[in-house]
Length: 192
Image 1: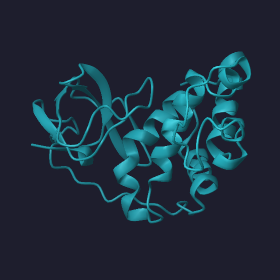
Image 2 (image 1 turned 90 degrees about the vertical axis):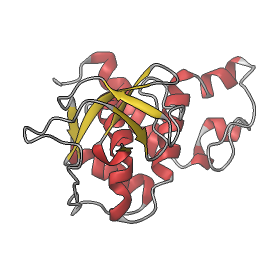
Image 3 (image 1 turned 180 degrees about the vertical axis):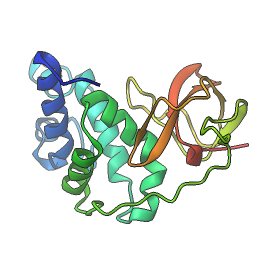
């Protein structure tokens, strides 16, 4: 991905600022739209409320809730690699900057993180094997960040070649069979 320009750069900065702002300091919290954990309490009605909680905020808050679920330990960071890939894709930030955001959001320093990768479903060429798999955890939809692809639901591999990586984990496209939505997974997210 090239350098961010104009509005893309503005939205990337806005995304990161909102992602690292404590829930209690957000305008949505102050207006009573979300609670201290970011859970939606009511739909916005006034223009002030709609400015404080719109589609952009919903996306960031859904990703923020995913990050906040990361137990403060490096061993579970792999569980959230696909969600972190979404952040990387939406903002264009590097792995190094992503680690800095994680530190600000969770208080945990992941700077010396080294992934323990499994290669259960990878071919010798590093491609993922075609087929249907079950999810080992809830996975967020790329456009909204909503958790509609639930644990144990079925996915079909869309492309066998990795579409990118995050923190040393290869990320692949899959189609969630129930919703027919495109999702991103790592080999840690699936089981036959």
